Length: 116
Length: 119
Image 1 (cartoon, rainbow over the protein chains, first blue to last red):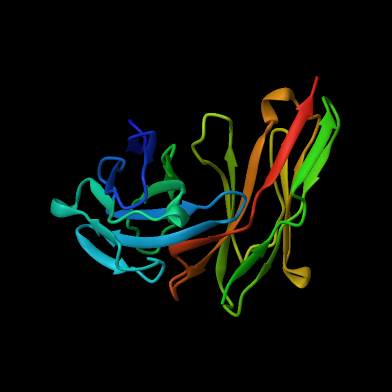
Image 2 (tube, helix red, strand yellow):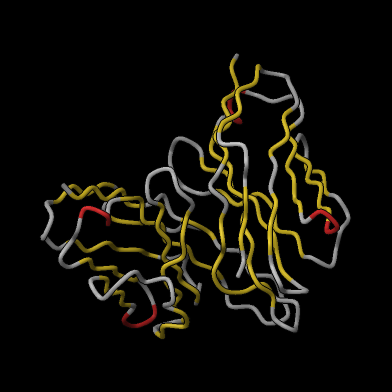
């Protein structure tokens, strides 16, 4: 079974440009999460999709960030326009939606974003 | 609000030594889940263990063991007879639990502990 995949693995852009990150979750996983780790700090939650619906977007830093999950499969996270403080590693995770069971989030390798 | 603290930023040991990674958490929830993830140099976060708050039995998996102590809000991770392949960043995390006991939603992570095992 393929794991969570993310594209691109690295992205270097200039301040003010737009970048779109993609995440393909494990097949059949309804839950999809985005997280971000800024250099040296903890991994922080950005948002949570259940299928195509946003369940929790309390961690999105501002309206320059737009996440979508059309059709409930893969997800994109667009940053427009990018600022220096957006640099970091963006992780995607997915999990089964279980009732009465135990949810475990499986992570992708992350996208390393550097804004110059 | 939930918080996870991993006070050890970096640990360096020599192969075959035992090493314990500390994790202390804060939550107002009565039921919750605790996790450990490993991040090897390849970058992805690898799930190691999930523990629910109503089960304080310690767990052992090969060279790995976990000590959950609700009284001190700690969930420490011990690697016995460490190996070079154990070198990685280790993250402790916490999630909420619904009334049915299912962990759900966002994970709150600690800052991670960089473990280096020297040959």
